[in-house]
Length: 414
Image (cartoon, rainbow, N blue to C red; front, side):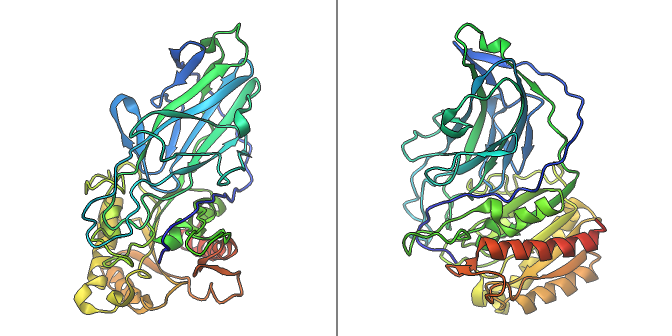
């Protein structure tokens, strides 16, 4: 379950980078202003991770936690680099389907690494974040370095991570997606044209292993930083959540569809939009169902942990928790193919839905799905770290990640 508000703090558990030799190909950037150069989102050397929608001009729209942009740039001389970003900014609904806590505009927080060094530790412990003062869909530029420091000449890797979820606790979702418009580059030297300063290169290849996660606040990392200054403000760090850490431990790409407060058939705090609906969307906060292209990214494994917010509905036959869960797993199996390995989790905040999950496991296994039970019970017993507003702390997330990674590794032979 979620609180009434949150102060978002972002942190990332990064595995040590490996050295890779890559044959780089250069791509030209497009001049957009005097002294500035736009590297457009259509540049072939950009890498994108997470569910994203293509917009006019090749812009990338997204709102799921963990969406990521990677680039490798080669600078002829020291330059300032900014990311051009906009956000949909609509008012909350006048009739929020029984959910009076709908938050309307939600700030989105990003962490940037330049050559593996995390940038920006002020404010909300993020490199940059969107703000309510932004006009709807207005393009704003944000520095990718601490205090806007220039990046020296040479080749550099830039990694931009969306560290927060969509419109939190939104039983009636309000469009809150962000749009990536490209990177702005400006030479420090006034005597040099920016177009002569930068080129993009092919970055190291992305991991070939792929894992998808479907969950709620436990998977989103809600409250895991445990630094709440007041009772109704909670600190979220998706980049330290157990699912993202599993990706780091197993060197795998991660897609996560997670939304605090939502369940399989029943939400903790109102609204009729549940996670099976979100699972079918590219943009979680936009009410357009069946928009996700299942063929665009096919995971090796799907991990589902949904049931905490369902409460008693998970064990009430009239709520159809088991049947809905089976439908979700079978849909994933059909769309992703027979080699998909599915992990059905229960815990650590509630064990009420463990028996129904076992029923789902038995049913889908009988239908030929390669399914496994992922036991996350007991991680909040105090042995692995403290709880934060009832949720796993980063310490607990780390323990859950180690256990989950071992289970996935064994099942897939990694």
